[in-house]
Length: 321
Image 1 (cartoon, one colour):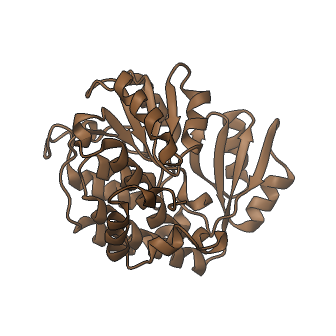
Image 2: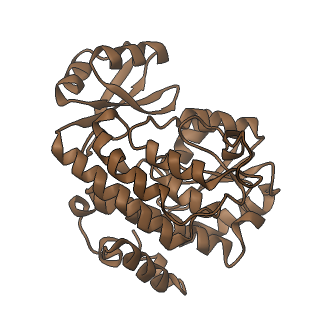
């Protein structure tokens, strides 16, 4: 996934910095490791964030994100890349912090065997009721037609055996029930790490995937800058380990902000697919390789107003990778 990016000037140095920050050989994992190796969430999370940030810096070509990007948001692990885009972390800091998250989530997943399944279609209320009846949790609410259920394998089997009307239940190849109370041990260990991590207040509008609110809206006490307080970002990045990802609410917020163009950072494709169904009329580009950069720059040139309309999003749910 990273081999084409390494042909661009400076990317090898970026990746070396990210490998040092994570303590992981991201060069090997991004070029020669097999699918089973990078599916391990301890590897997948820093690898995905690194990919997103490599794509972002290639797109910006030396420009500051705050001079180009109007609003940024991230799906689960993607919120770490989004926070870096908003200036909360430097890029290596984002990779280092997410590596801690990934390792602790992998440990929590190994302690109790659990899983996740996508529920596609069906009435939203009936889907949520069926998930609850099976003793499961709605880990990701991605849109009105896609919810990811998580919990015990017995509960997932029961949901698959009796799915909601007009819905399909699709098992996901993941290590555990992420974004549920099964991850509480990971949260307990990660929260103090996040609270003490070097960070700055956001320099542009950053949305929380807990409820779609901007961090400026969350900073009612005005303890931070005009775009919110970094302490709130750090706290919510920790809490998301056990909290559902409400990407549906993030998309509603993008509509409310008047977004007309959406750019998904590498490894791209999942979120633009959701946007095509949930954000009618919003133009999208997914950066999957350097070949997509020209289209991405064209979208930015036509939609960015720095304050009202264009956006970047990152990244697909790491736990389904």
